[in-house]
Length: 431
Ligand code: FRU
View 1: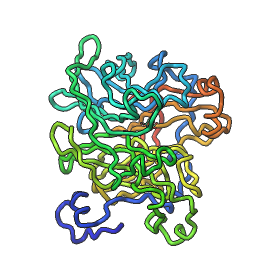
View 2: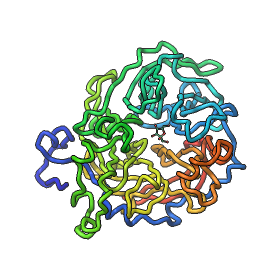
View 3: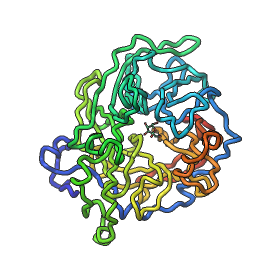
View 4: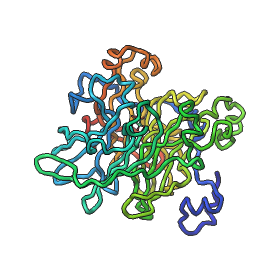
């Protein structure tokens, strides 16, 4: 995808480019991803779960996000910081937690010790049969806009996996504790359209990877436009897709393209807000696709530093296509334009890798605007088992080896198109 920037004088948006018939989507190529290597600049310190503390003894938690202001800074509301996390009661088989996830919140006066606030949404009101990750922002009037994934159908008897982006708003009440009140109605804001983003039907209802989830709010400081980023897959059925030179990166990588690579179609989608209430969004072409490289790019978010946009996502080692050996990790891309021309950070995209001797220790990293990265403890000390084998172990094994709590935060240095790890911080620290 080459765009003749020399002739473009005014800032172009992806809708303009799309109208001109120009592709704006960046490809994460096999060439870039094939060069991924673990080293001291990207490998996280080994986690010792016994030294960690839980913020709740009743629930396991995983994907976690703080309440943010519209510029992406963790918000402080009357002295309180608030975080939200996917949760299930302790005792749930960790591998089955996605089937009954609910969003809980925790609040803190000091940003270190967290008190449980309970479930965020009013009983029975949230959309979907369960709720997956999202992002919650507070506007200047104190109204909280909550964007989340509604998965499955409300009240369904047989679990289904359809995913929709949903929203609801509420006020925050703070006194000796933190609570939410004056709720709006929950509303679906976006479903996969089959043109930019693969529908569940195109994906063969669970036969192949399908994502349309993890909305993440982003205000572009250069234009004032508001967006949601989300995790998706490139559109079309498997028969309609093909691996092309732009997915390979070089003629050599095209020549050696494995035939199964076309199963891999992870993408990062965007939708632009078309009203000030943030209840109507228009889907735009994806920011990035990993066609023939990776099938699942989760929880994307963007951080702005200087003149650059940093796009982050996370993925599992087993989501990479054949021929690419890459770790469970945080991956990232950088561009001077929000909608196009991203380059993989560090030349490959790898930003944080789990160490080789604890390859599933942490997941779902989220980069804050100051470079601090939070995540949760996934499976630890699994003695060389891969994720498939872990899933086949007994309930007791899974419970014993699953963290289900906040991981130590990591401080990231970000300069130009390079990143490196500066060290570990306490669990749940955003500073
Ligand atoms: C990442 C993730 C998200 C999803 C959630 C479901 O850990 O897979 O993409 O929203 O977990 O539990």
